[in-house]
Image (cartoon, rainbow, N blue to C red; front, side, top):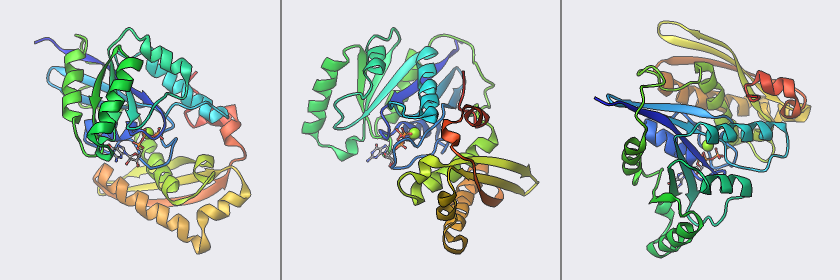
Length: 294
Ligand SMILES: Nc1nc2c(ncn2[C@@H]2O[C@H](COP(=O)(O)OP(=O)(O)OP(=O)(O)O)[C@@H](O)[C@H]2O)c(=O)[nH]1
Ligand SMILES: [Mg+2]
């Protein structure tokens, strides 16, 4: 039996549905999803195994022009996703007419590997609009195979996955067949908390936050977690905590519920808030949080 395996890297503008697609392929909530741009900050591997194949998917941050160090590191993750891909998935959402970054766009159109162009969120569209989009992108990206999909409603997701398996190079597996991701358990705790912060706080707050899990202690029937939410300024600390701690409590409760599903165990979670001045622009801090992959 020939075995196929390879790296399938998902890239595109912020908020188009990259993480939603990754989770749909995996069948698990590996990547956090919110309606805000720049939800994903890392490159996250999700591995789908079959008897004769291994698809190693990468979810990546949406492409932006970096304004500060954190964003520059996020774009470095996107760059690495170009370098090791066997297949590129370029995702756009219905109505989208351009990639914000010309250099990335040229890389995709000149790619020597198969490119799948996915037009996502077609549940929000009609036949006429879709046909117009297909025409537009056929001209703009003639090297790509195009698929209209809805990652949210699982429309055409299976078909795209089957095509990926077809296109995979013949290769032994890169990871053990029972491995789902490259990230440690604590990473998913941090992300679950960060997702709730993205959902419940406004403006600059979610973008000023980083989460670090200091304790992850797994007992037979319960996991005990202590995590710290880091903010950049004093004033942000009060906002995160809220009146008599109510806002922080909500974050903890909701994150706990998600994590109980994810780990299949009861969770006890303790959150506290700390100021870490200007961590987003501090090389050392970024490295500590796993951003500086150079
Ligand atoms: N209607 C509709 N909404 C979708 C679909 N796919 C994703 N969304 C929504 O689009 C928003 C962004 O989804 P994400 O998966 O977080 O997008 P992303 O590309 O990973 O975003 P970043 O990580 O910020 O770059 C969320 O509110 C999703 O629920 C879809 O097929 N249809
Ligand atoms: Mg994402």
